[in-house]
Image (cartoon, rainbow, N blue to C red; front, side):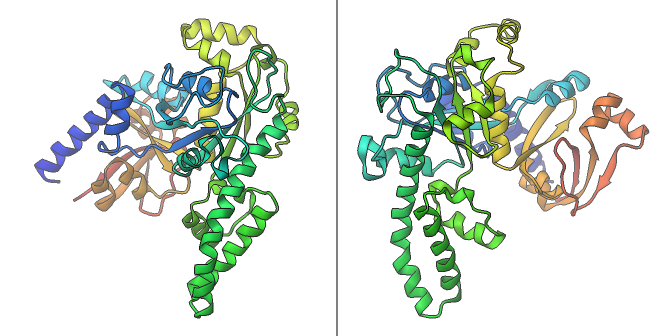
Length: 399
């Protein structure tokens, strides 16, 4: 590495760390320049189901207006949220670094959709375009009953509400797919091999949408996944359902019962009380834990939501730990060691030699890198090593 590259790596790392303390609007504009690859979760649902309240709690801000009328959110609000990870806290406690830097996810508060959104109702076309840009969807479904909060449909019906949103996404996708069909049919008739394959996948997508199902509900093979991804469909995005219950219901209602009310059959659903979570941000950590305990709740709904969102994107965490900083990094499950190195810096991947690796459990149990080394728990892994969640890496490279 040249002296310039060393300086550049140091200043970039320092810049990324310092940015987390900047105002949110500056973070959003500057993080891409700093090398962050934060993935986005779009928060969707009907108006007045608790989306903006949940967003405010997630980002510990009042950035999204929460009001008792439809469409109080017009332009999407974007907030950076740290992914909670007790392992990072434990490593920091053991290593005592100058800085501790968590990994992050961006949440996007998208305005409430209504029936007819796919045809432009309620500014639907603009809102649907915002959804198209995110990596995954957090679908907030109102379960709580309250006469004080206006419901756009007049009554609270979780299953109907979920189906309205999903149908609008399905209709928007169907319109998008129909525009592609003629072009692909022409390519297929001309004997284009790729065109025939794409048309076969498109036909399968259309059949799925016509059946009123999300494209993400289909078990696509690897080749099909690549083609479906290129279609940029709203319904192909992974979905996490946030079932918004009242504070009183949180400690008593069963998740499966709430899922049944909403007609949800997937595992990707959590219970959350958006109003309670917004109140918790004004309390100290000790007071918040005490209140949750009084309600019979083990952990914050927001912690569950963030971890679940991280999960549905197929992500995992690895760590770097040293005197300067202990840091969590995001990587796709199944990534090889050089790809992990590349998340830190492209030069690390390009010049990858080997990775010195300690499993988090071993590091935490033994208390230090040196102790892990003496116990034979430090391994040397090569280019074909598949990273495991919680690996602590020290990369050796030469550029």
